[in-house]
Image (tube, rainbow, N blue to C red):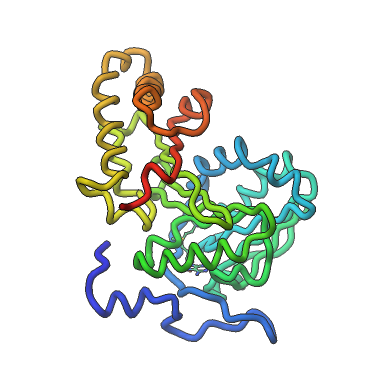
Length: 285
Ligand SMILES: C[S@@+](CC[C@H](N)C(=O)[O-])C[C@H]1O[C@@H](n2cnc3c(N)ncnc32)[C@H](O)[C@@H]1O
């Protein structure tokens, strides 16, 4: 998707192009603009698997384990899946699906118990909620880079104490995904995750990079160096293909760790076709 052109910039501004309803008297306007609502059952399984593996302690430690799924799209299916996945691990979990398109909120049934799931109109201001965890997937791709950066700031400022924003992108069927984890101080990590059997090379994931990185995947930029290094390690590990593509992925990721890339996590995560690296290693120059 090109970011060029004044028409696109006008449409992509955080200022809604059409009036969006106020959340409630006295509340701030929902920030953002309605975009395509494409979603699919199980599309967000990779980020949910990562959330389950890494974020349950954060939720359990919270006085109120509130999770927001921002921009759930034309159906609530991925919000309900998130609640179903985290619910058994987090006593008292509350999940709120926020959508800036009021018609999409009106279309979904409210309240499931347990865990409790609500659906409301809201935008980057998070509808005045103070969640411990925000999942915003396939939302910012449709904004321009500057607006996406402001959206990060707005969402991070709205997090509850010790909160985390997970903002990312994936393909239609959730086979290729990338996401950034951020807290109130800014970005912490970038994660790449894929069904590795479908990859010709790891840099196939480039087309799914978050808005903050996708235009920086050019020579001289750190994220380009990361993907190039991963491609080279993947090629060098070709001999392991006989043991399956996941073994090959793990070997490639281990090679990156050996080369000094600041990876987070362990082989246990990499076996899922994941790689998490500190943001400082991929932040645009
Ligand atoms: C492509 S859908 C993504 C659906 C789902 N999260 C997924 O990944 O399958 C993007 C949704 O985000 C919504 N959206 C865009 N900007 C938003 C904002 N600022 N606040 C809340 N929802 C927003 C759009 O209306 C659209 O329904």
